[in-house]
Image (cartoon, rainbow, N blue to C red; front, side):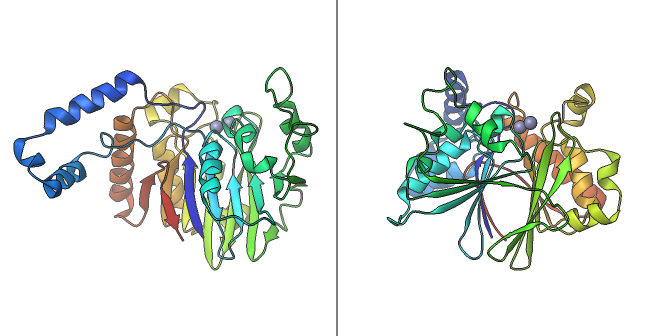
Length: 320
Ligand SMILES: [Zn+2]
Ligand SMILES: [Zn+2]
């Protein structure tokens, strides 16, 4: 499986402001010495030496993750504003006149997980097929309503709307799961206002879990059959880590987790890799990288480096 991150931010798209860009350029310029710009190699070395929060950004688009299975199927997790970036990228890839199938799994229907859908240009191509998956029986209506006038000028279906072949799959029998080719998919309810599901993908002996928008509780750590079957020993888990512990205490019931809880969770379930996801929109890149540093320290203190931790960044790719 290949996992590509197109949108990693929570709640609302968060572009860098002009002042933030200016401050970054100024901070970089202040670090340059004469030897840093002597030749091309020294310039490269200088750029590589800059902290990641200064030379780059985690990105401001909301949730969208692409999963390519070992058999080449394209699965998309959530349709946040990152879906527009994926759509632009798909336009650059080789395509067939016969079209392509996209399997779009929706965790829930909050705006930050839907707002990219009207900009998924592949949905306007009648050769393509889009299969929408949700536990909600009303998925077709919900998607249609968010594109109704006056909220958007183009409808979901009908004249001017999406022309791809669309199918809607309600995920019902969680005991059995479903399959796309040889990839097995399971889902699990998480605690979030209005509900949200986590997805588990098992493909060629590797397990990937996408668990956005969740407020972890004691029950998520209990080693019963259902939890164990879903969470134990995942190769990678992408998890809502929106808050610091301090902020999580103030925002109890908002439906998101602190990074320290997600570290505890990943250690509890012996996961190999934890990807901190759904970043708080008010956190700067500098703060987010300090969150990563704290999470790594905390994990190392508790479990001596058995868990790898990454912070989700737009453009990041995992190969499992
Ligand atoms: Zn969200
Ligand atoms: Zn949500």
